[in-house]
Length: 616
Image (cartoon, rainbow, N blue to C red; front, side, top):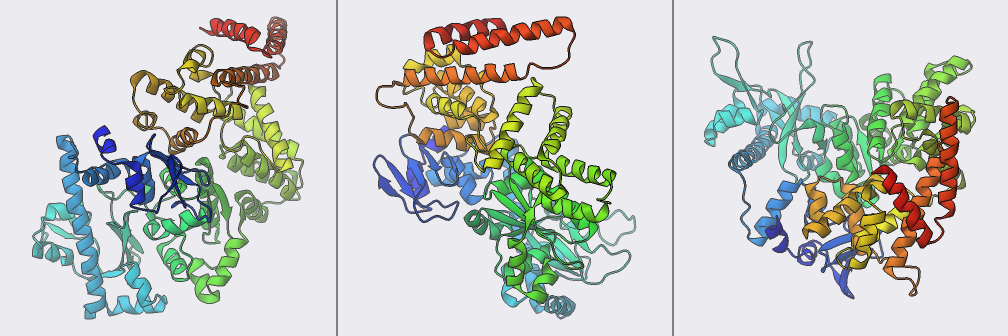
């Protein structure tokens, strides 16, 4: 991969997508991943990285292609290899799979075009055309979404394959035909899709990877929808319908509209609401959430207003919250879905529904209040617990605190009582090393939420972020290396992202490899790679000219250890036996003394060395 990287200068690659302007030793531009008027997107040719100080996007040349094109790493590598004229070496199995995939892409595109011709030209497709007319889908929309018709025959796609000299084994691999299990069958294979309105499913590169067929004649033994099976190209847990059309709009608005059905999504796009996507015949998964997180900070869910739709919305909200996305849920009148609502009341009215969408907690409380007797203690307790189980999915302390505060107002309960219950649930879900330390962090988050601000935001503690900013420059600043190795091992850091960046920075120093290479090889999360890129691009703070990098790092190490000791001391509580209480009191006194000595480096270094010796 190094040959591919060296053959693709990041300025040239990014410059082929957007207009870059030189700004000193780097380049800047309007960010392609979010809408802005003042350039905050910077490219550093020396480090071969980019970072947007507006939306946080960042990484190396591979990261840019992955994010801009919406592809996986291997696809990005192939694109960059081709651009640089580098032959991408693949193992025999990988090469064979890549060849099969190329064949399947051609098959899907060809069959999609075949179904489109059937819709417009076949007399037998009259029922499909009437259905489209009934659903008020205009010609432009039908063409944009490449809607087609699968003939009411057992061998329509088989005949197409024979005409184009495509093997039936490949058609089977594409999921377009099935092998007959009947002994007296007239043919070994038959078409999966028959007499259905066909919706091609595309990946983020706009390649057809599967189909969804809507029945035109309903019956007790006829499935309303039939989707392509899992194939080399199609993994329904990783596919979002219409993301190929919506991703640019989502990146600009930083919010995705998530619906339940394909017609809902198509209706939204026809009405000019072009951020709409839907899952493909499955519940929303972690993969879906992380795909959307490439483009958005939040999602707005608008599902059917029946009980099943309400429950599905709450479940989906939990999945998106797990990924660190903010979630809003819109409510439609009973008996309507996005498609019928827009047809009856128009796109502007639906935009009003989106504007009025509230938090997942507000939606859940409204729904459950209609199902429970809120005047009873038991009913209130049930609703409160269900809501806290949703809040528990948020990995962000500030978001949790805000949701708890909102829930308290809507349920007319003290926020402190809900937070106590949430802490208890968190302990049971994942017992912390020091329980009260979690309590302290949660209480701090509540206080910040009430004040409307946070000093740390979604990232780790400020001093850990600043230390990592020095660590990503260890090669350029060798004088701080002994300090880091001796007094600030990566495991000292409490934030997972900071810990990963710190460990990778030391590995990069020892191996001579690039930091982004190491993070990618270790399959670090996209957010971690972005954090590393931002830190590499940002100027390092040293508190004035009189402070050297060594002084700055020493100060940060002292602050990190002080925070660690304070959290441990705050967590020393409980009703243990007399011997345990004595050890606890002794440790508390020791921590208090150690904290008092962390005011200057000479004494602080002795304290840190003593503490590290105790843990080795």
